[in-house]
Amino acid sequence: MAPDYHDRTVLLGYRWILGSLGTALATVLIYGIFLRRTPEHPVGQLNADGYGPLSIAITLIFLGAGLTMALGTQKKAAGFHHRAHDPGRTFRDDWRDALVTLTNRNFVVALMAQVIAGLGFGIAAGLTLYFQTYLWELKAQDILILTLLGIPGPIFGGILAPRLARRFGKRKAAMALFFTSVVFGHTPMFLKLIGVLQLNGTPALLWVLASFTFVQMVCAIAGYILASSMIGDIVEEVQVRTGRRAEGLLTTADSLPSKIVNAIAALIPGLILTAVAFPTKAQPSEKTMELITQVGWLYLPTVIVLFLGSIATWSFYRLDEESHARNLETIAGDRP
Image 1 (cartoon, helix red, strand yellow):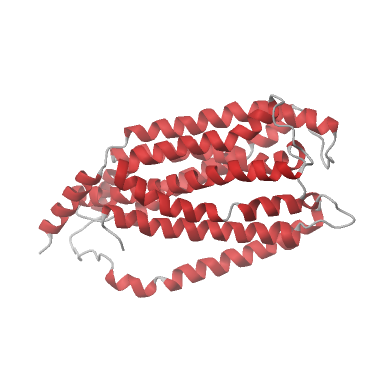
Image 2 (cartoon, rainbow, N blue to C red):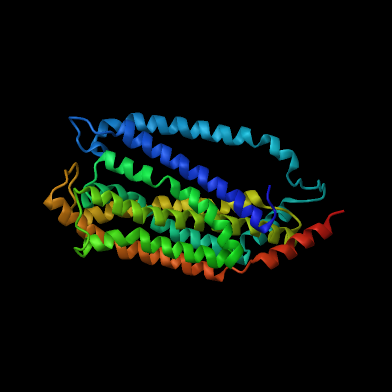
């Protein structure tokens, strides 16, 4: 849909903006409807009865979104690249091309960066709600407000990504954005753990968290847009080498391992909570603050090292605008 080096980034910017707005909408549904505060459960996210209806709603939303995506792209399919029929082609030929695709240097770099980051995201996903509830002592409505304040972030990220890519190149811009995201995303917790940021229970806390989260989200979304665009650029490089496009294979091979690692890493928070003997069905208290602080000191260096490792891995990616242009010229010259 967008073979141009920069147009591709703009298109992916729309994708990430809409995806992030969908995440924000989901958060509104979670904390505004299913896990909202009630007299029996003043801390709404600790209301176990809300998770059953929530899981049903999530399933229906996933089903609706998947069908919309599949049906909505059918009209565009006619304009896509179509592989010429080759009756002499064998399964061995397909397997050889798949190996060439999956062993592409730039793809291996992108895959490793995604897998390392997936470890960090899996750990973060399993502990974020604990930190919000016990470290920051936020209520469900606070989390909802925090999410709403961050909604403009993806929009700014989508605007920022193509501009930085044109100025500095995708790789350098993405690495800088990811690094800035890590700094702003973890500074509030670090300040809290060393006793500097002591604003629990005050209106100022939400504004401080929202400010850091906003910058973190803008930079992260812009970085993800550029990373997705860089992976998309590998398609033409593979086509030059094999004569065949492999968008489906590259996308699946890139996302599946990182999602598996993400899921496996989600087990780590349980081990950390067990290691500090964090109680089940706990209410925020001085005891839980002491325990969640221990969790924070285990969590913070772990995820920061993982995210910085992922950023460093991108430094080995070698596709730039000039090489992408050469690939497009080669492909155009090969067409009858």
